[in-house]
Length: 263
Length: 318
Image (cartoon, rainbow over all chains, first blue to last red; front, side, top):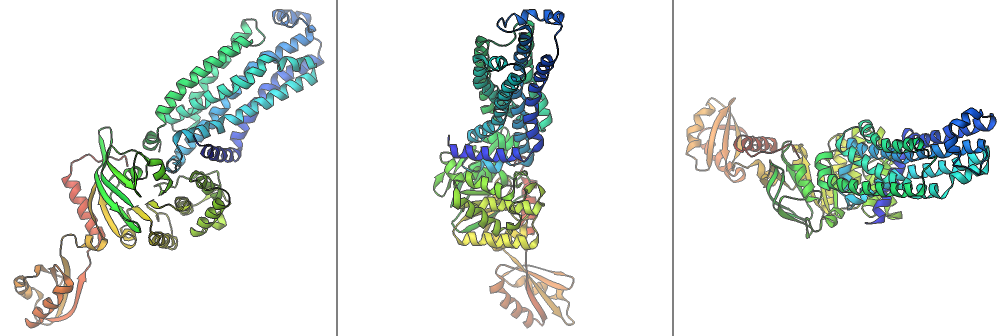
């Protein structure tokens, strides 16, 4: 594995992405929207008196924050509950970039000249994977930081502490990059089988279903957020899925298959 | 130097190329002519280390295909059938990317990019995105990309397609200078005129190389040349046919539109004797010309013959 080749691919992909405003928007806007919705609710709660009857409906969640006032506990529940949706960004965004990248190459027939260089297929794929995953990881981390500090500023610094908890710091540093990688690999695999980016993204979009499922299940199980054990299990499951995707990707993306099938 | 022995490629039950054996020396331009699906692209992909042959071996500048394919790719330049550029990048960034993949860095990279943008006449458009380029401009950038790392071996698939005559001549002249610099060059083309003008030797391909020779020798593939003899006077040209039939070096003769056409094996040696015999028999000769057999005729004859004769499945893979 030669870093020079991988870096060249990353640089090229970054230039490509920066020149594609639509795709660049697709990286940043979902993250901002996922953060804006709960932040808006927190602001609404901050400026409005809550009806005790409404608070009673979510009492089981509020009891998870015994040190906070009912109002702050409600805000804490909101910010933590929506954080599962932060995992949608690494699931969705890298796939959009990866499918656009691979299908763009197929349409432009630009894979052959790249594979005619001394670069290995694995170096090309790793470069593409890093280039596709990095914007989503950075966007997620950036919005995570913004989310923590803005909500702390709107309501109370206690919210910042809840958001930047050990569980979520570990999730951001491990689960987010792993989901990004899985998303990229699935994007590449799906792209090899279809001929337009939209179809690839629609098929690949199924990856978000387990994430939404986890978030909804968390809500109905009475948990405001994940615990450390769940994050670790999540890491393990996603890592296993990455292993499977790597095996499939390696099989699909040998040099000859790319040239004779993908062109 | 390129040396292939018995090279072949199968895609499942489909044989794209078989028994491909030929050599291209240093400082030689070798043309491959063949119809669509003849295996030209597959052959180039095998020789440039892009795909593995199913059978046979090849050595490129002494390096063995397969075991040293990565090293072979490093000394090889390839102009693919389709330019395959990155539309969102500028011409300079496209070339810069490939320069890095071929190991160029820093000032060397910048110098190479500027030089080859100049060679193909695209310096003025260097900082424009290639997505807005015409077909010819894209082809020029693809040619610059193939040359950027000063490859020792060069494969050019239809190098002047989409180029205007002036740009095509510039590229042909430049390819000729690369030959003079000792590079081994393979040109795949449908342009018979270009093949004839540019190539030292030509291989006619349909699944395998049917014939390899210089353009001049290919034109005399059937061993004879046709000489036209234009006569004036009262005697009919047909009255000389019996005389011509008795001459030992004449392979055949016929009259078409009042002109005698005589088949001889060696026009330079036989024509003086032919003229002498006709004049002695009373012919009044106005002109004697050697009728050129075009490469196109040879190509069509050969590909047509094989098309009728060879039932081997040749796929559209290439």
